[in-house]
Image (cartoon, rainbow, N blue to C red; front, top):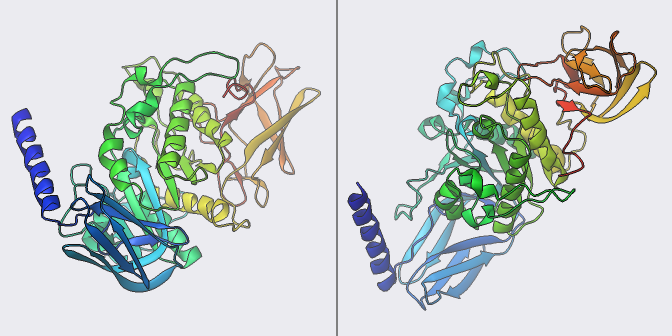
Length: 485
């Protein structure tokens, strides 16, 4: 098997060398027919050719030249363009000429992660039976017909340059079958709000930990907490650092994008990670931003869904392991231009690691982008989030941000999911009373309360929402990492 792979690799390299010697231009897989180019940013166009070969790129009234370097690499950056539904052609000319057809200009997003992001549209044969959150008005898998939404499925074994220049497709028919449902529904909702072409790139691998998505050299760090404590090298956790970065992310660079959507964590949660995962996610965000040379690149991530991790036989996990992981994810809100999407309400059973409702996950990500990236501040994108607490006799008053039109109960019953404790940290179920946009929390057996936790259980699915129907974000007032991260 090794010999076969070695021979195939040698043949591939030989063919590329022959093409370069003969002056044949080659393009990365991401540059092809039907692609969407990012508006209002410089547009890199790059590839390989013979050393010293003159390359000319023509598109949308622009004509730019460059010369391939001694290694045969070249790059041209087109000036920023406005969004356009006009299907135009791009010419790349050297010894040979490549013409890419049917190109639009609009908004381009990369969605990445593990199986819940990879979760394909073809898995929605039973979507009509789902009852929670927003529900699609139609069967998109069979009825999608918007040619202004384009998709590129990043397959790690098929990212080599291709003479056919295929890869991008209209989001419909056979092409849509295997594409990320979260990515598609994000694009559909965003298109309805922006009315510009949308391009989605999906790079996700089922079961993947976060480490393979980070360039191996970037993992060789020892995170230092604010109290001076050293966590130890992140790479010590194994996980094939860089494996998917090298084969799926690097081949996309430096294709111009608007932002990144991330839905991953289950595999790391099974390992009982918390603060170490927070630093890994921070490393991924910062390193990918550096790769795209944009320190402000929007990065929006999904908090993983409720699941009975404590039933795992491989690790000594508890019902608190998942909430601690949620907390670790949320710590990265300290980075600029990051946001999270909470989906504690979007599962029918905690024995399902891949819950449905991916259309609602996509919609919530779109709400986030609409508000945070595109400035539509009237769009509510999050449920209530803990802001501060105040001791009031035998109760604790909790204040929240992201209350939208006001906090509410999904079933109009008393708010659930709250626990309370005194200084001894012996938590008991609490009574939660809504007072405007604040909540008063108390328990008869806790005369001197000191701490409050909300949804601090892997199975917790509280009825606490805002009037826009978005669930409150899990929290604990005794977060040990808040001042250390």
